[in-house]
Length: 127
Length: 309
Image (spheres, rainbow over the protein chains, first blue to last red):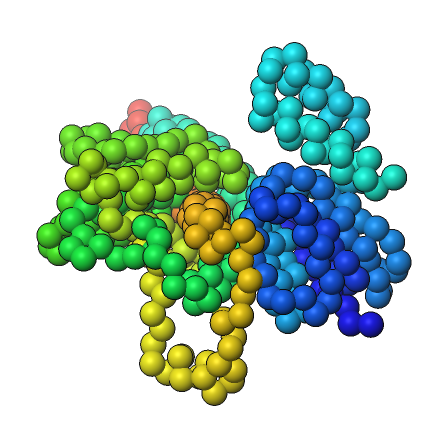
């Protein structure tokens, strides 16, 4: 089966790169799933979890990342996910995210609350 | 004469202390260049992908966006000059300012009003001393810029681009910063960020046709080309500014390293010549003492020889 080469890059580093069979991301118009051979697409991402089904050298498995805004572009078997901030689920400190979520709710800071809940969603999605 | 020797000794001591300081600063700057270079490298994939995406939208759709269309008669331009917060970096900041000044006068000669935006305390004080107007300035992060800093700088610039020219907006956005070419070479450069220059040279487009004429044609936009462009362009500007800040930081460290290296070399040279002078002074002291003793004893000998007669 054809493979999808995925690159997940944040503004200041490359977060993840590898082969995948399916990538699910959340665009402003709703969730989008991309498999190899998809039509070239360019979309605006919303904050949310990105799920990558890995294959090839990286082995079968699932990688989940929390992405805070950004873009997705797919051409010729190469998918780029660009985000200002992106974190892999296993990099996320659950306790800290939980704490900042509670704090954000207490202070009714919508922005921070959104950030923290996206992190928690990503962690939950990987389990 | 012993006083002379003491003066030399004191000066040698103080120059040695200065040399130690400049050597330490040289080492610190050298280690920071590597770190800054690594950051530039780490930010490159994002910038590359973003540029590719912007090019794709621009070629794959005929959307007119205020940030990409050139004004018929541009009247006002914004210039962002990136300098450093601290000195001791040779001509680094003054070269960056010079590039900015060159850009400004060029734009002015084209009949455009220029709004100046400055990053770095050196640039701010240059403009403040000449009592020239600065639209916005930022200081405090030039040594180690983060993406959040770039966003902060980009926000008012993008806002000014989007505003109507009659209401104080600008038609063009230029940037003057120092490009990090290598450890030894850093060149001040002037770039136009917006409107994007999308037209290619004739050869380049001919090449595209030979290779594959559909390279940029088939994109699907989610949700729509306008909205993608709307979201993409500010990010593009931010990432360009971020890249410029990082390159400037790396260049600044390289300039500091070079300046401190030559300061250390000069101190060494100075110590050498002072040591020579101190040696000569010491030798002169000794010679004088000897000649005093010899003179004294021969005077005594003469005197006693005279009394025997």
